Image 1 (cartoon, rainbow, N blue to C red):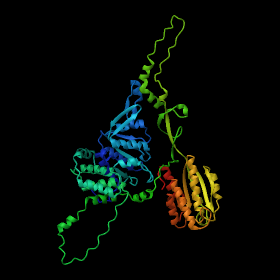
Image 2 (cartoon, rainbow, N blue to C red):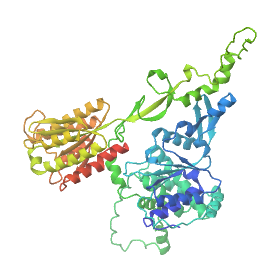
Image 3 (tube, one colour):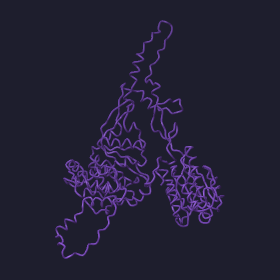
Image 4 (tube, rainbow, N blue to C red):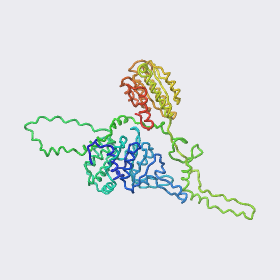
Length: 610
């Protein structure tokens, strides 16, 4: 079963991971499957279902599931019929002993991920809502389907930490997704054998040591790796975990979690010439014993071979300052009374400009109907009107009595609009080299913003100051007209441009919108903030202004449009915490593509654009 590290195809690893998960879905906890919807992903999911016993429940977790459906709550119809609170189980309790498939996990709400993670930790669902307080025992495994398009689009971190294996089938073709190794009978026999598998202390120490060397902080990772190794040993009919089982588990569990590589050891010094007085070299048997590779080194090599290409570089790039807030498809999340996506309900007065939630109101009133009927007393029979020449109406009793405390109103959240601020270096040096390309790129980006109904603004700095050419607007015509009239020439007041952009971004943020700044400059300022010429002072002021952007926690991108990549521009981007893109030989289309590929996807994903 074992193969040299680094030679295993992603589909083969995926098939083996499916078998390990089918043997012990609760121990492995879950699989994060990164792949687009298509035949390859469907084939892998079908293979998992074929391996699982027929009695195992498999449920799908919708993206926008409500808490009532997820955790359970009051059964409204049964409560009204019985006259007492009747609870119903939610999806997490219903999937006990089975597998939960979470669709589009990269877009899973933070609250849903938190409730799912808490259930995986405790093995029970705590239901405290609608006047109910109950606990349901449940243990299950999770398959999180990740359809993210960029490295930043991924499931919530809490869920990633708790699911043992991460697979990536996005580059696997249909022709390669054929091979399968196990049948359902093999899985059934391995399940029966699983509880008798023993784990040696050397395996535990090696797992923990490898996790430390790869910079994996979570203690869950070695535990999940041990569960995967135990399932592998059960599949291969071993009584104890062998080195090949541990290596497979290290490759599947540790590979995608690594945050660093172990430091390189210095090569040993060359041996000196042997003296005649030195003792005889060891015999052949002692040499063979000394060449045995420690288990920790075997696992480390297996895990290093599974680290995705470029993963550590991405961690280094995005591992700096993390944003405390998130920006979404159209900006940050805000709670609203009437706009956006429903996120639940709360007690409230419908007359206060909010929307009543009829179902939740009835759900709140239902448990108290029997008590309220008792308080009102049985309806008194009306005196007959026959023989007296008049009729007396009997007031009907309401079937459901709703009181003020029962009213529930719907809570909404929506994303604020995004305003992209283009800060164009229109100084003499840029005008000579790249101003035409910068104008063309801004026009293309303006068209993108117009399609998404985002707002745009434009700042230009030249001479001794920065000028707001275009206030935030959706008018594409106005923006193009303003851009066409932009002249070039003069000094480079870089600090003034950065400060003006930061102030405009703060003003936009105060209006409830999400600002994003795109700088197009070579980073070579020669006008200080006070308008005096001089490159040293100008650069000092520019770096100080860049720190304002960082301290304000603004999303920014700096496009270095100088003929050759300029180190000062890169340093400036680092000071402001912005993403840096050097485009020395690009045209307008390339600049526009770079911006779309960096800042704009980061906004859509709610990920930091740096």
